Amino acid sequence: MSNNWEKKWIEDIDFLKSNLINNHKNLFFTTTREEFEEKIEMLKSIINNLDYDEMKVELSRIVASIKDAHTSIEFPVNKYLPFKFYYFNDGIYITKVTKGFEKFLYRKVTKIEDIPIDEVIKELSQIISYENEYFLKAQSMKYLQGADILYGLLICDNIDKINITLEDEVVEVKTINPKDLIYLENIRIPLYAERYKDNYWHKYIKDEEILYIKYNSCKDNGDVSIKNNIVETINFIEKNNVNKITIDLRNNLGGNSTLLRPLIEYIKSNKKINQRENLKVIIGRETFSSALINAYEFKFETNAILTGEPSGGKPNCYGEILRFTLPNSKFRVSYSTKYYKIIEDDSILALYPDEFQEEKIEEYLMYL
Image 1 (tube, rainbow, N blue to C red):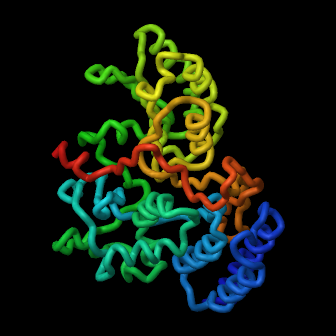
Image 2: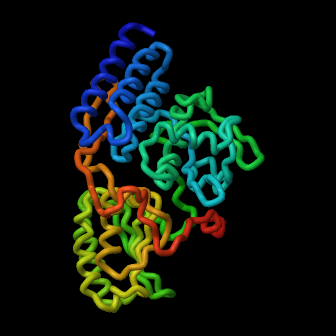
Image 3: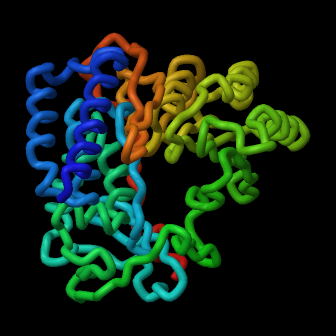
């Protein structure tokens, strides 16, 4: 490697170090400054032994060691496996595929190259920012898609094709470019997995007389505002005399928690809906940040039953992120600027549902 390679990475590493130390609300809440700086110096000493993908991984390892789920590093992924994965109760399955890979749909993954999938997830856990096992389950499935991430972790030695074991069958899978990562949409899937690109939508389920509301992101979706969505929802409820509502927050990673307040206030004032038997809120491993605040608002302010999996977000945590960009690699780094205390007990790692209900691969297999 050239001296210029080393010089630019040292600049980035020092920039990362100084900005995190100076700007994070409390960088050393789980580690010491000495331990952090030791990791920084160790990485600087081995730069010339690493390639670009290995540098991405090692920078992520340092940031992940802070153990703040809101403090993380974003880098480009240039090669993907043509799949989307999900960690079900009995293992990891392929739940979405791109064109030409239909035969792999809903197959169980047991190895990447010759490494058992549990060991692959263990390796990924070292470079992912998380605070509980549920968020790790969610985030690891996204990292598992990145062929150059697997390459940087030395899990595979060819970024263009990777051997994957599907139960007992070993298949060679060619990786694809980001522009080709377009999942097939003409496959029937469970209701909660539909319209995943829409930040907010609702559907009336006639057989059960329930209005299902899916809240995927605490953000306006372009010109479509959450405020207008909520107005439409309330108008539908009033016009159709709806008594039962299910609000699904399981895939909501956050944004602005105040956007949902008009719906929460309406539900609080509606005596028919605000009954334990009529109001359900679904949470899960991707219920995080502002969405977790909304879930607690339902828990504390309404009579809702919380169902699903424990939240990916930790109730009391650092957040309110800002970002900076490393000068040479242009990797984006997010960091926390505020501490949120929702409950008294700091040791509680998640919001736990009243009724535990895991997602199962059978919910997908029924549509084959």
